[in-house]
Length: 145
Image (cartoon, rainbow, N blue to C red; front, side, top):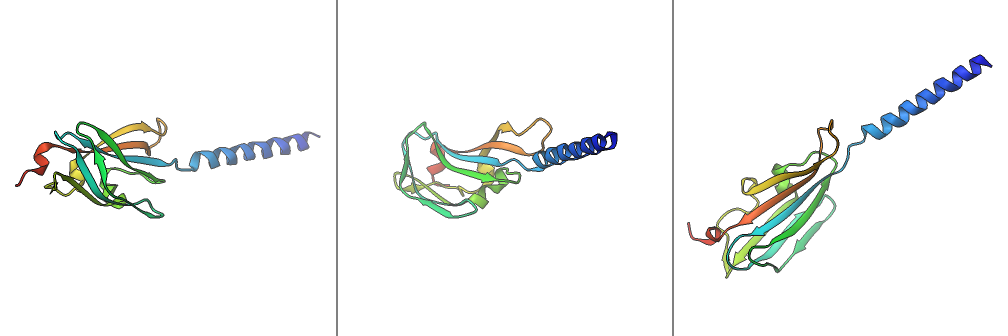
């Protein structure tokens, strides 16, 4: 009977170990939200957004963002780490206009986007859980250079 109990305890310990290993080895999903912040004095229009989320290409046309407002443009999800260098992976084309004039910079340029970590997965995890990236549009972005 003693040997039987010892075998049962070992099996329970191994089962606990495998369940623990299974749940701790999975990578948590990582999210990145892309926002447009309109700091110009007039409304801006986004006449074309082409985005790839890993499964399909989404296209949005004729979106108006009022002055001094922020608008969620795209939600991205991944199982690997994401940072602002991945913006061109998800956002293929972004055309922004004000009064018929295009912005005077490349909207996909990652140096123009500000990133903020909203939350992390766990204190000991290296993976980020939620990132907010914002492209701020200012009045001088429509001036001729």
